[in-house]
Length: 281
Length: 251
Image (cartoon, rainbow over all chains, first blue to last red; front, side, top):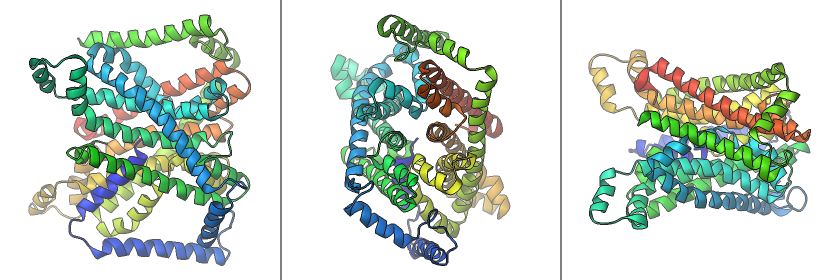
């Protein structure tokens, strides 16, 4: 489910393939987008497109300003929606990572534990996270906790599987070499296994964040009016397609920004591996 | 060792089920909060006929099949074409790159505006979910064909359509098949969400509706059913791809 992390990876890949910079790579896309926007605007002015279905680009621009200054629904500004969505994602994600990394490290090191948990983990991953929404509401009520739970669930299993796979892929000679030097117990984990597994763990972390982003948009569409998912659904209910489209654009930008931020963190923390794990993602 | 790994896996799954069963019956003791697996199956059996159940599963699978088939066809065609023909990529990729960071679920409201609340809007959202990874992987696969391969074929006078169909596409197949599997997995998650939000049939609807009727057991049963159907369908796709492309093509 690496929708978001892929964006940056592909952008980078394309940057690499056009080693010789070609002016057409910049001009053609710009022209294509400009033509599309102009045609959209023209068709709206001419009355060929129904504004309820395709509000013209100029309308979207004013709606964006309205969303920032006045907010939608009345009084809930764009910034609030973004902040609430981010807060839910980060909380659920942090809990999932905090649980999945230690558990995954232990399970990945033990063939028996791995065999024991593998089917359960595959099954848990196969359950569409959002289908748990009704249960989450029963257990945690309609408030924040239910949404955080869903994000946590979705992120946890992706993260867990990636950490287990990462640990299993650690070169056994590394571990043996460390053992011959009397490194054992937690020191073995901290100083050998974790650093060697880190690149794959990191790429798992990016995929998991993409999952969290996907889950939150769906979870917010039910039973709340705050958050970006709620914004676009609420706007649709009241035929404010312009607001829905602006909201989608904001979600897209946010997704791109998150992926880009993680990419930078990875490049900073794991400069020697950033390229490798990007491929594996 | 292999056999014991399988046995351990079964033991692990059985352990989870037994722990769930026992804690639901003796700790929570409230099937409206945490139904046990057997309670879930019993309540599903008492509420649903087999025929109704088959209809829900069938409705979901039909949506997946339609949306995924469209997404796979469009994604593979456009991806391969833009990977092969650079000027096309200059027009197609900007739009794909702009739209791709938007999670497919965020398209649900606009899909309802464009296509109504019927089948078309769900198929559209699933189509989008499948399209982006399939396009991206197909494009990437075409772009990462070793140039030597193409040059070698050209020295043997293989060019034009033959070069594309006999050399380039086979070389890109592993990536294309990765994209198909990723897209298929996404389709399921999206399907359930789309059915939770607006549907009157399907597995996602069954979960939501049972909860609203206060039949939590049926909801739990439906959730487990989604997991089983997803696993089976994914396995079937992996098997089909392997048969179709050979062990080298599907990884």
